[in-house]
Length: 187
View 1 (cartoon, rainbow, N blue to C red):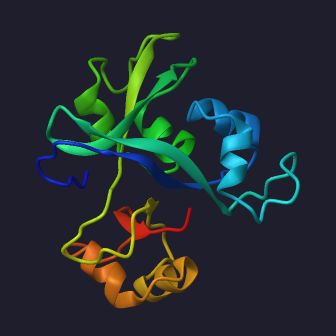
View 2 (view 1 turned 90 degrees about the horizontal axis):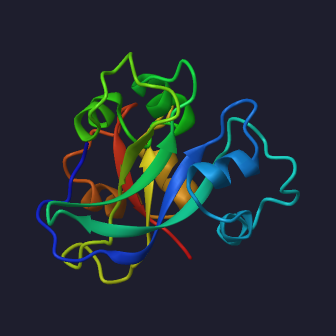
């Protein structure tokens, strides 16, 4: 998981770029992130009909970006385990790669493939509040999981942020599938 180093405070708003899996609906996503659908809709003005969300697209999910244990910026969502759940499924499918299987294993006490049904686990998603050394122009950031087929220029074009700025906010990234990057976003 990418971390921001030591932190002493977070920010009131960050966004997660949630890749919509086949069969997902807004109610399910709302429950995953403990956000009312009305709040999610505020950050997705292109979504014309909330009852019909297109799979294989992305939604922006708002959440607070907290300083966790003084170590890194993130937010912990609570997820109730269902029959046959495992960390890989939760990370890759339910949370669309906003967290890794390895990180789920590290922040929870249950074995990877023997999680009891109906327990609640922590799903901690990294976030960013920006970096004044890069730019003072951006105050809202999107946690963006890179998928196969994504590349730096496409991500920059989609977000409307110059390639150089995206690179400066993510200096250690090679922008390959499976990575998380932080993109300046509009509220």
